[in-house]
Length: 468
Image (cartoon, rainbow, N blue to C red; front, side, top):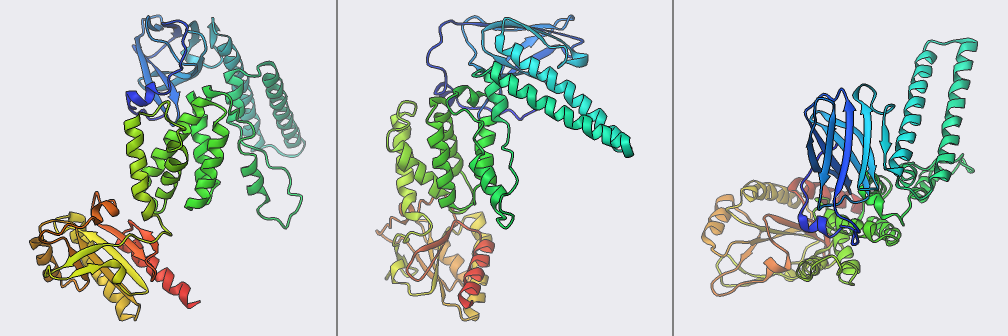
C-alpha cells in the first residue's frame, strides 16, 4: 500500500474539474468474508494516494461510500482495509455497485452501473488467470527436461502471444476509456534489435525517445492514476543526465507534451517547480529558476496560482538567478574585524576563493568552521592559491570576534559594523548558515551550498584536472 500524505486544500482545489453537472456520490460494495469492520476509499493523485472517505462494514461485508453534496473526480481509486489495499477501481459514474469475495477478490469482482469498471475488471480477471497459468508453467520448467521442457517453453510462448493479442483487441474495443489509456501508459517501450552492434548507446537512445509513445497526453484523467508522476520522474531520474542543463531540456520536453491537457500541465509544472526548488542536489536551483522565468513569469499559471504567491515565486527566482553555478558571484562589501577597513570580495586575488557566510552561534557552523580552517591550511601548504572570504552573519560582532580569536581563523574576516549594514544577506539569499561558495579567479561560481567534505573533494578534483 502506498504511503498517504496530506496536501493543502488550496493545491487540491486548484485541480478540481471545473464543471460538475450533479452533486453527490454513492458507491456500494459487498465483499464476502471481509475481515474488518471498516473500509477506506482512497484516490490517486500525482505522486501519492490519499484518503477520501471511510465506511463501516456490516457482517455481510456490505459498506457504502456516499456523500450527498460532494462528487468524485474521474480517476482511479482503491478500497483499503486496515491491513492494506484490496483492489483498485475506476470512478466514472457517481453511483454504482461492486461485489466480490475476499477469498479471491480479483476473479470474483462484479460491477453494476459502471461501464469502465466492467472493462477494468475484465482486464484484471484475464491478466490474473494468465499470470497464474504462467507461474504454474514456470514452476514446472525448473525441473523439466528434454521434450517436456520444450513443450512448456512452447506453452509459455503461446501464452505470451495470447496476452499480446488480448491487449491489442482490448485497446481497440475500449479506445479512449481510462482503463485502456492507463494500461497503455504503464507500458515501457520494447527496444528492437540493434541495427548497428557497434552503437552501444542504441538501446538507451531508443528507449528514451519512445518512452512516452503509449502515454495519451490529451487525457487529463491520467493525473489521477499512479502512472503520470511515476513516468515523469523515471524519465528525469533514470533517463536524463543529472546536470541542470540536461534536466531543463527534459523538463521542457515533458511540459510541452503536457500542454495538451490542462490537468497534466498544471500538475507537472507545480510539482516540478516545487521539486527542484527543494532539491538538495547542487545546481538544481537552476531548474527552479528556469521554470519560474519561462512558465510562471510568462503567465502560464495565472489561472490557478494566486497573484500574491506568484509574486513571491518570481521574487525568489530573481534572487537565486545571480547565484547560479556558472555566473559571477555578487560582490560583498563588509568591514574588517577592527571595523576600520572595508573589505570587498572583488578585491580578493586568488585562483580559488571560498565565500563562507557563517554565525558563531550556529551549531553547524561551530563544527564546519574548524573543518574549513583545516582544509584551507592543507591546500595552502600544498601551494594552492586559495583564499577564504569569511563573512559573519550576525549584527553583533563580539561572539564572532571571540570565535575567530579562539580558533585562530586566519581567513579574510569581515562583517557589518557600527552604522554600516551590508546587503549580502539579500544578495546571497541567506536564510540559514553556513553558506559556502567556491569561486574561480574571475569570481565565477563553481560550486555552492556544499559541505566542507564536498568542498574538499571539489577542490581536489579541480587541482587534479589542472595537472592533466
